[in-house]
Image (cartoon, rainbow, N blue to C red; front, side, top):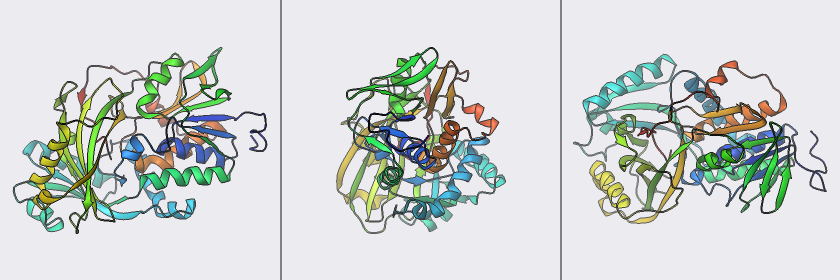
Length: 400
């Protein structure tokens, strides 16, 4: 799998579809392993859900079992990630608070705290007064407690994606932006390449990491991937004085209460190093891929933020965005090979994408190069049995 000379009339060994966090990590790790790799993105790098991401390197909202185990493995890599990529990513060790606003949420967070502690995570259940000591700007009547995790972090997702691409190029990676893939070509049960406006690209491996767009691209290969998406909306303020030390998220994200026809307005907040405050979110399950913002969602997001942090009442909003964010109904990712199409791998539908980005890139590269795989990863098989319904919206967040 030498990288030499494939651009001069040759072809890549692997094509990665999707230039976001997961796709760029996979492409980098493939190139690092000596695999001739082409990364294809329909827009700019990080122009989809990865660019709308708050950058939270978070543990507390993960699913338990293997998902938590992998999350903790991946989290350990962030301490050396800037050195590995030779790039300042804006990485900071911070904490997070899942804000408890009713007794149902308190019961859920009590259970979650016990499970996190059993896995060695330094999580603790706080009273409302204890939470306000950590975050004095929280309104006294806005919460009755919180789940606190002191071992989390934050970074700039744009810098991470571009660092993977840059370091990958140094190892022979080719990157095509503004090149939408129109189809995955399958011949005699094997993926053999992709179709693009720049022509057909033959490859022995195709890796589908296109987020919400993975569903339609999967159909071109004869697959019915159970990828759904929420349309998430969020906003960012002007730079403000210190407002929140930790990532703040309402525990409402753990209550499955909204239907696909309703818009759910929750609350999550992160202050960037420059002082700008990112605030989300309104989300609804939809079958339409759109980047719009809506006249109803943004005022609702602002109102939810002001109620919890009154100091934001006079803050000016400088930008807002909407984006489709993929998820899977059983809250587990699609990761690995698919039945019936050799050479096709899928990597999408991850929760809290940032924290899993380094590990997933390494795992998928290992699938291509033949490295030994943990047999337990079969539980994330894209071909696993699943009842796809007109689902309840219960994705913890579309922007984190």
